[in-house]
Length: 176
Image 1 (tube, rainbow, N blue to C red):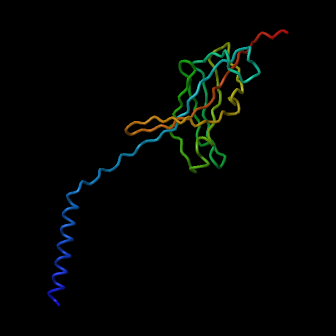
Image 2: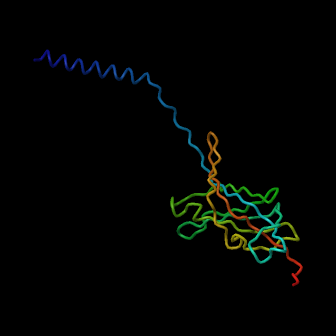
């Protein structure tokens, strides 16, 4: 009986040793590199034509470069959790990387719910009055653009806002 127990014990030890040796030769996976995920908001700022004054129409509108917009995010406790102003580039396009944006609550602080884009200023003297086209005064909500930019260590989720518009200060009144 003792020799049977010894054989079983020896077999168990040999199997354990064989498993340990084969496991030691397996490749240990490298530590995964963390991907940095960024939140981005993009859109365009226009100068609304005098013909469309008083409407939300941007027919005949011209893009405004070098205008300023802001992105404001309010957390679920109604506190400002992010604020930054951005300049538009050529053709009125803005690409606002929300570096430093943090979500305290994964659902309530999500950018779609907590962030808005507002008009701040236009450097175009003949088109610098704020309009509420697409809620540019109140804060344009973000839309999921189903767009991602993916790199080896970087990923950006892109949201859209607007288009937003300023209007000319002086428009010739329409005559009937």
